[in-house]
Length: 155
Image (cartoon, rainbow, N blue to C red; front, top):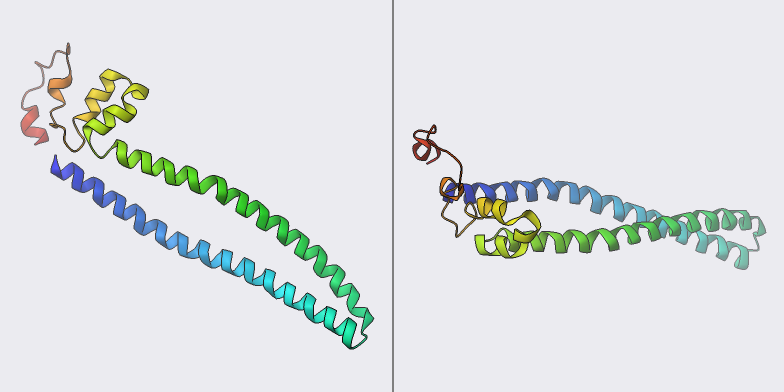
């Protein structure tokens, strides 16, 4: 039983290791996206200064172009923030719920017992921390006489 729990912990750490590489790429992409946003804004400021101080009125075409680009980037950043504001709480609260639900057999039965069903829930809850690990005794009404040496095979 402890092998199952330690294997579960190992799988969680493997998932965390694989996600951390992806998150570095996502962080770099978001930083680059907003870096381009700031670069266009600085270019707009330079164009405005050229128009007002140096009387280079042909820079207005640059400002028109930058207004359209900044409008599109603003819309994309709005969609990005909307996506993350919906996705992040769902992911965080879902993982938090599952962590509590599978941390012990009592927590599993209390949180997921009604959703899964009482009989199937009792089959799974014995495999979680705090459970006995004896699935065979949970199978009421099932003829297991043909299974010989099952305890030795699993243990």
